[in-house]
Length: 253
Image 1 (cartoon, rainbow, N blue to C red):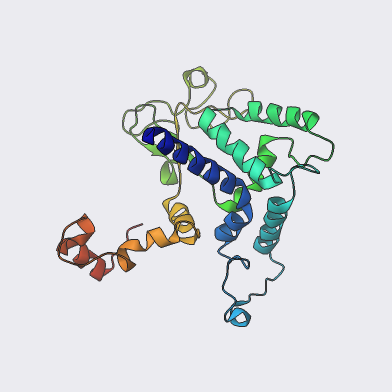
Image 2: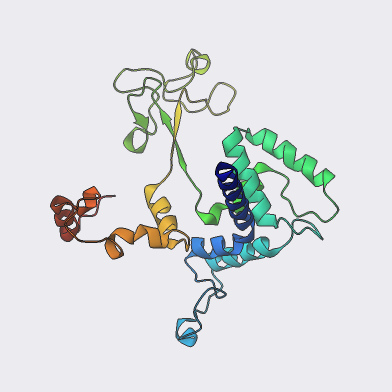
C-alpha cells in the first residue's frame, strides 16, 4: 500500500512539473534574456531596478517572444500558448528523431486540423527560428570518417583528412573524376555531402542558461554559499587541493 501511495505521489509530482513546463514560458524568456520577471521581483527598490529598453533588435526579439509566450495556440485554447507548443514539439522532434521534413509535414497537418486562427509556423525552419534567441543553438562540423580530425578553423576548406587521407565527403561524390577533393560543390552544382558530422553545443551558452535561470541559479552557487565546512570530505570540493584551486581563480573555457 505504501508503494502505491509513493507511486501516486511521484505521478502527481511529474504531472505538476509537466504543467509548469507550459505555464512558465514567460519566465523562460525572461531568464534567457537576463531580464528579471517583474511579477516575481521584490517590490522594494523597484524604482532603482527598473530598466528602460531601447528599440534594439534584442529588445524587439524579447517582446516578440513574450507575446508568443502569452498568446493562446488558437482562440479558446487553455492548455498551450504558441511558444509552449512549439517548444514541446521541438523537444519531441529531438527525442523521437524526426526529420526536418517530417516536422514540416506535421505542422502543415496540424494547421489544417486545428480550429481557424491557430498560431503555428508552417515549417521547421520558422519554428526553430522562433527559439533562436533562447540560445538553444549548436555548431555542425564535418569530421574525418575515421575520427581523426575536424574540418574547422585552418582545415575548414580541405577535402581530405591530413592524418589518414580519407575523403571528407561521401564516396559517391568523391569518386567523380571531374570533382577535386577540395571542391565543396559537386558536379550538379549542389553542396557535397560530408561523410561524417559532429554537433557541438557551446559550453558557455549552456552555463549562461544555468546561471541565468531562476530555477537553477541557486544550485549553481550552492558550493560557494551553502557548503558546510566542518572538516568532513563529502565531495572533492571539500578537499584542500580544490579549495586552493578556487583561491587562484583559474578560468578554463
